[in-house]
Amino acid sequence: MFRLNPAALSLTLLLGACGGTVNRGVESVHQPVVQRTDYAMDVTTGYAGALAPGERERLDAWFDAIALGFGDRVAIADPSGTDGGRQAVSGLLGRRGMMLADTAPGTAGSPPAGMIRIIVSRAAASVPGCPDWSRAPSPDFAGNTPSNYGCAINGALARMIANPHDLIEGREAGRPADGFTSSKAIRAYRAAPPTGAQGIKSETTRGAQ
Image (cartoon, rainbow, N blue to C red; front, side):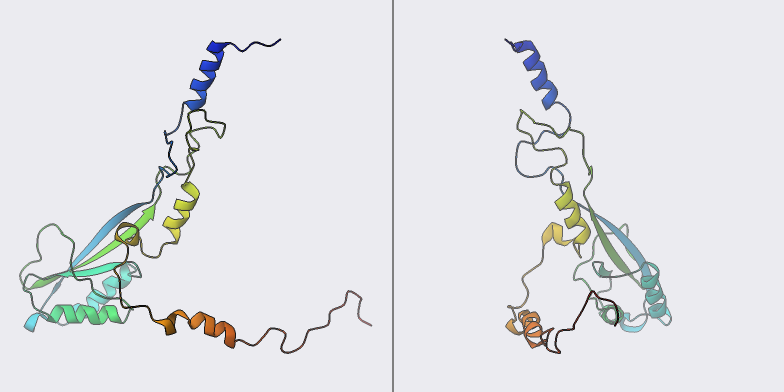
């Protein structure tokens, strides 16, 4: 007859619970983290705050150099409060399908007199510590979830999200839902001709006769 040693059982339970992060809930300890990087450029202004000659082209080239794209936020720090520079930058962004943000993040110092500061904020999402195999995938008598729990789904979310800022604050409610736009995919599906409308192609496994 086999007898279980209580001391050996206690040691087994301790070893089974050691290693990895303690997590007895259903929410993963591995959550997406958003890191933001700010790029700043000062451009000279002229009459009524508009961009000085040549500055528009220089700013447009800078946008190309930093690969400005969807998800980036562009804002202006303008101590003068004029609107000429904002209109010029908005025009450049409009050609790229982007809009100017309402508020600018804080930067070190202020733009010199006669200049405005263009600030591009770029965010990237990742899940630090993944994959995490610090705890062996074995029965956990302490009720912890696996150490790698949540890495797959949260890692996929961090990679797929178009704008990482949405993980922090989400989107503000826009205009009411447009039924015509929301049903566009359904109309396209219904309007498409059936794949068998031109007849079914005859196939054979026999060689050419």
